[in-house]
Length: 298
Ligand code: NAD
Image 1 (cartoon, protein in one colour):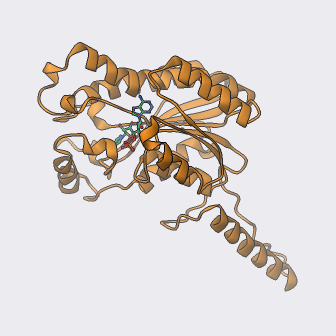
Image 2 (cartoon, helix red, strand yellow):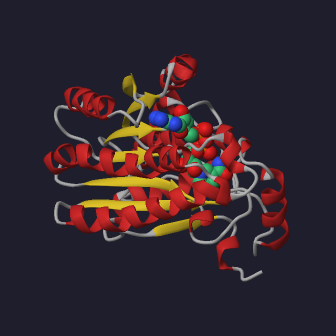
């Protein structure tokens, strides 16, 4: 897997890097050297990926998408609603994108149409699915979990957990056609332990975490892997709606073994591992990218 640090080459940058590699190859041969400096192929060269959950350049989904693109993937994106359409289209235009289309994951019609479009764009196959979608009403991310009303409880679980099941089911035939595939979702420690203010989203993440394991069991027979990254606090649009988010960040900095924040790039690096063939025997698991905070008892 290429590690290009913080330099996020666009498609052009990647090709320039390739040219430099080839120049070195030529130079090595020109000196009559037996040792050839091999070009390192990106881990996602030739792979087709669908990414749900880009809202803007701070989205974890965008960091993952860039990583996949840097390493050779062709991407399809979904966006939710007209409000963010332009932002997603502008970002998608900077990478090797095949499709940008609308999807509200609460709608079975939308999910069905999106995977039909993806099948058309990718010749009936799909290798990678990134599910980076969650929602809970802002008023349920403050105050008491006990006061969550029925309709907003189901809303949070529908968008943040059931959507993975619906998307995995739709991805299954396309991934089977590809000979297998890799599905990744984004979770948080608040699904395993009570985190003040995370409330109904914690219950949704617990449902998501269990869904990862059951999907991994069902789909493993078709060589489709399903995993999650559990991220520490990252400043994104969704994070801003959690009351007390700065406190969560401060506590991680104080108590995590590494005493530092994680960035979307760090999360993307973990995601890229799980999505790549390097993790071909890893499924039904959660990788923590949280500076080790999950390991602590207090
Ligand atoms: P974000 O706001 O950039 O992404 C959330 C995405 O969910 C947005 O693109 C939004 O359009 C999409 N979405 C919401 N409702 C939808 C619907 N009905 N249909 C389709 N899409 C919908 O924020 P993010 O922090 O990048 O969140 C991505 C994932 O990472 C979420 O699952 C979140 O819970 C998880 N996560 C985030 C953090 C963090 O600290 N930021 C930590 C752990 C896990």
